[in-house]
Amino acid sequence: MDFPLDIRAVLTIPGMAVLATIVILWLNQYVPKDQKFYTNIIALVICEVFAIVGTFILYGRPTAAQLYMTFLVGLFGTSLECFGYEAIKNLRAFGKPTT
Image 1 (tube, rainbow, N blue to C red):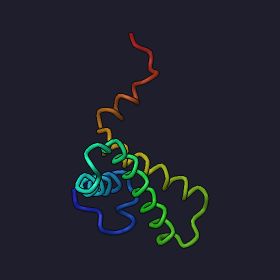
Image 2: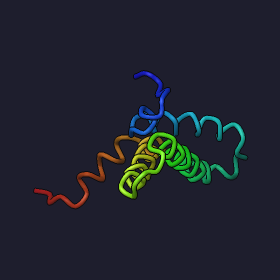
Image 3: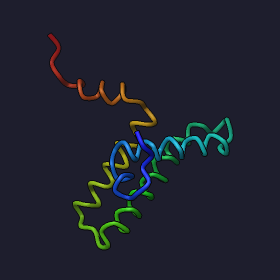
């Protein structure tokens, strides 16, 4: 996978996951060891800000639907990085009847 270098590439779930990975790597260098709990929350906020700013740059005046989509892309991409693919895959199975 190539690194997302333009706004459209960052505003995808894989692009946001790559951005979250880089943000978390930087945060791990500067957040004190006893406050690692906050790393994922700070990463989510930073990635959401990146996503919203990117949407405004891309669309000028985005609609509410575009902003909502951007919020979800930021949430899902950052969650993919923070919790991993398996955790998200397991959520899809949550609520399905077992046989």
